[in-house]
Length: 315
Image (cartoon, rainbow, N blue to C red):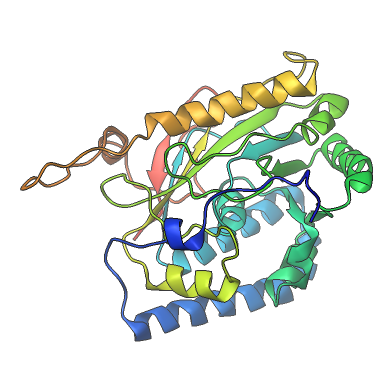
């Protein structure tokens, strides 16, 4: 392991406990079976889907990804609008392997992922067929070539998603890593916007949920089972205002600006304290969402980049 690689102090023992309701063992097995069926369907359907025009292809990817997240019993809430199409660099905090289908359920893109994922059973093959860009984290010499590949994808009009913390963090207060700068060079070279994205997995009362966290030496099988057993978890995706090309000319400044946006959103999600004998009421976000009609994550209330919409997947 190279000393320059980013690491996180989060561990499965400290971060992944589930304090809410749990699903029965048969229910959890059914969830896993449904998710596996969807993944196999994705592998078989990937080649013909790649032949579709961009619009229909992205619609299929959004539908499949949202269905996969929902198969684990996780509902999705989205805040913000994806805005117009075109190349952009999406940068998000990193909590779990679930982040990948979660982001794809909102904004399909090419993911930058560690090369280890190629060896994952089933999921590795699916990631490759989805156009994932792989990076060998322990070989710093290949980093410039990876940035060049990202730049070409952005110039071709693709969205590229990066988790610049370089490692997963549990998502609790103050449990976040510094954004590494290298990937931001691709946005500068391609002259495309940077889209900060904040991800969170929460309980009904708005407090962080530990079950989805995939940190430290956690095993993928253990993570799958833990998520399948958990109930009452909601995934929140917040599309923050885009940073236009030209606002920052140095990747250090650009990375810092993106991190401020993401961590600023995280600070707004400070868990509420519930006193003994009281029942946690809905958060301001939940109350705001309740005022709007329910909709699928595939339908956007507004296409304006300035519009802030919030909606949920149907139960």
